[in-house]
Length: 301
Image (cartoon, rainbow, N blue to C red; front, side):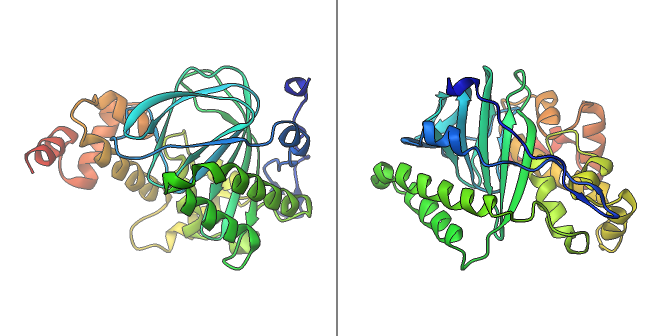
């Protein structure tokens, strides 16, 4: 049975003098062929993100490969529980959010559409309420003139108009085929050490700030040393790596505080803080106001 097939990530990619890179993906052609995308759900961003949700800076496409993935999203202005099975994909546009719910065992292909790259992840779902744990990951260059970029623009543009819902699966299949061909040709998984920039790291932090992100894990993710990462951020006027991560988390917290129904404990966890008291100290240090005072000011405004 297709559900029993194992996804086979390639072995770690080693580069002399740079240590071990994160495991890269092998394109799941067999699973995608067995269950081609026949339906695409599109979630919205009208409702404020609930506590524990993952706010998305970049558009993402979730494609189940085996099993069932249950999650909660906003569809047409309503909080909706969806059960994603192979053949049904979920598109989360930029500024939308995804709320993990009960997560039965599943394998999931997710695509994150950056301006110049596309991140391909194949994950094995973890236990609720944890997000899926990354099994393998590849980054594909996708400049403006690339065929995949044109398909991405078409896909996102059509998704914004409900009248084109019927053609979305066909465009999704074309996009998956294009990216699969590019990945199978051996595109580099990550930028070289010399090309790693503060901008690239900052984009990664915005997408993962709700996880337990540390200087060591980020350095390993980009295949550079901890000291090299510190030097990159040391050149910035607004502080180092920790300051950047804190600012990103607090900006997310500001958005969540607009919803008076969310508890501070839930907001802290959703922003990557295990300790609410520490979250409050960081928030006050950056905004000169406590979270409660900030919320009161926002509500009065």
